[in-house]
Image (cartoon, rainbow, N blue to C red; front, side, top):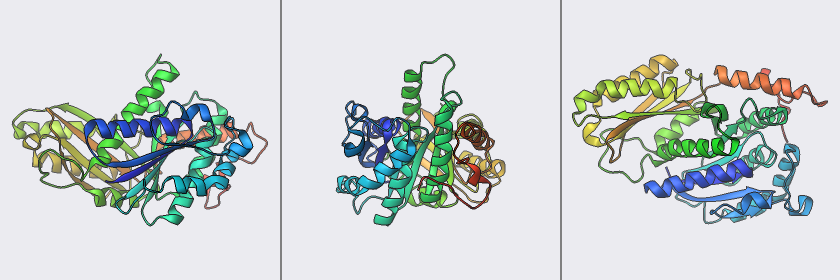
Length: 357
């Protein structure tokens, strides 16, 4: 899939950079270009991708200090400048745009929904959000910010692909090391997903292309991605059980939003050397995912890679029944009680929305 990336805020910029590096190092050629947008100058300086500083007239490059309503306001004012900066990055070949953001901070959580809405108005291609949920220990402000941001961006984006910071945060790991490791983990998974239909080694027997990704994400407002890998035998018949057991690990222990096993639609990609991928194993994995998720729309196929391992990537779309998301919303509601403003996540219980804008 030919994609353009826009990182908003500190977390969004760093994750976008990791995605670009992963794409280049693996030679996928899926990421057409990227831009990092922020209100804090110091967060843009270390990045080696194109950057844009917004809100200078108001915060003078010092950031919004976790105030996501201010982040939304500044993005609203400078959206034309962001769109102009994306000229040449989003082209006629671009098949989707991903707005990447941490949903708990100020610039990312406030600015991402605004930018998604504007990009959908300007471009006739899917605009997705790759959103990072704050961990349980990241503070009440981050929980409340993310609750409001998630509700708003889910309304605006064609789909919101979620990453829970707690999914891969190792015990005892420093915050800096944890975020860097999470970014690499996410970049590896999203990079493989975007690579579908792009540079391949060999010919896939059952092609997974951009339309399969788009059609899967079309069914649902929130999504999650899972991944697992295992050593493979040169004999594909010996890899049937390898594929099915790896698919189970991908869904049950490798999801970007843990405790997520129900969905409205799914995509299963088996990646590895074409001579080692068993067709029977791919089909069994697809049927197992269908049974486990309760989805009647499970697409599947293989992605050729020059590797001695087999990997299984599972994309679930329509995950609103996830226990992990419900747990996060409970934290966000509790955090909002410390604020005199109305509970920003109360709208999750009905069709009304007290969003950012």
